[in-house]
Length: 46
Image 1: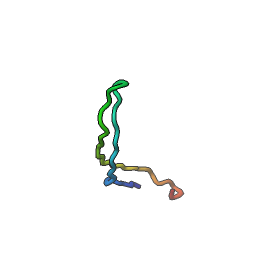
Image 2 (image 1 turned 60 degrees about the vertical axis):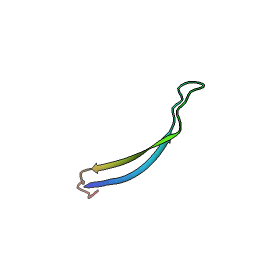
Image 3 (image 1 turned 135 degrees about the vertical axis):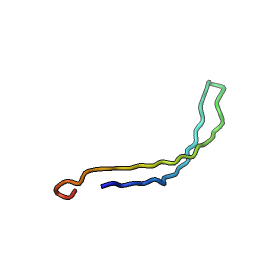
Image 4 (image 1 turned 120 degrees about the horizontal axis):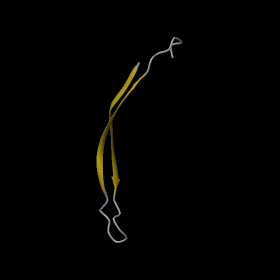
C-alpha cells in the first residue's frame, strides 16, 4: 500500500537575534512538502 500527498504548502516566519542590540527583521519563507508512506499489507489484511 502506498499513500502519497505531494501538495502540502505552508509559510513560516522568523527572525534571528545576533546580540542584545542587533537582530534581523521578521521575515518569512514558503515551503512545499511531499510525503510518501509505504507499508506491506499483512496476511490479516492490515
